[in-house]
Length: 252
Ligand SMILES: O=C(O)CCC(=O)C(=O)O
Ligand SMILES: [Fe+2]
Image 1: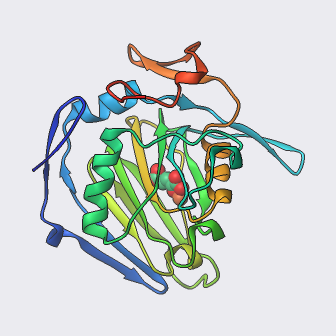
Image 2 (image 1 turned 90 degrees about the horizontal axis):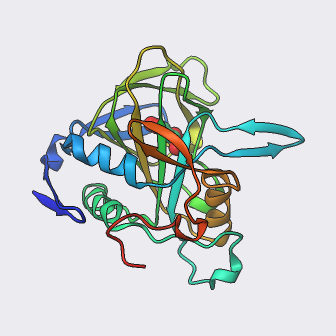
């Protein structure tokens, strides 16, 4: 059992031996199902305390609306001063740091970022992509935790179309660890669905340089309005932007 505070959650971890290897051509993953006994309060606490964003950005003149809520905490490995960054990096809040510690223990990897996604309904999604940016280094290990509702998770080989698409569900308290050549050779997605429960996804990653930090804050915080989840729905918030980085219980 491990305890994360504040507030106090006693989370019971399942045996690391319970991980199931998922391997295919160039695919190397381990699924812990469930990774821990996830209390509903943990999901609710994260949803209600994290600062969420609906990021809009422009690529090659095209305006893109990210089809889910996102937020991010962490800073790359360089001990760069904050002036190197387009946005001030936010420390990983204690609750997410405690989850990160446990994920590091089972994966044998170390992480300096937690990216958070919230899929409010079945229209929220992430399209096929791989997390293969050079700022993650070669063969990055990426750990992905689900809290709340179940969503379909699809993976396809980038070049060999004879390899079948890998389809699974990701459920509350699942931890999927993607390793080795998985990012280099495969893409993954959470497709749109009808009638699904809201879901939080946390991904744990390690960025090695300032470019990683700038990229993650640009695409997961951006410049748009802040949202808070209050009384069962997302509302645009006029919190003081200087306080976005903290969640309750964290010292500044
Ligand atoms: O929600 C998920 O399971 C996947 C999220 C993801 O692929 C990402 O944030 O890069
Ligand atoms: Fe991803």
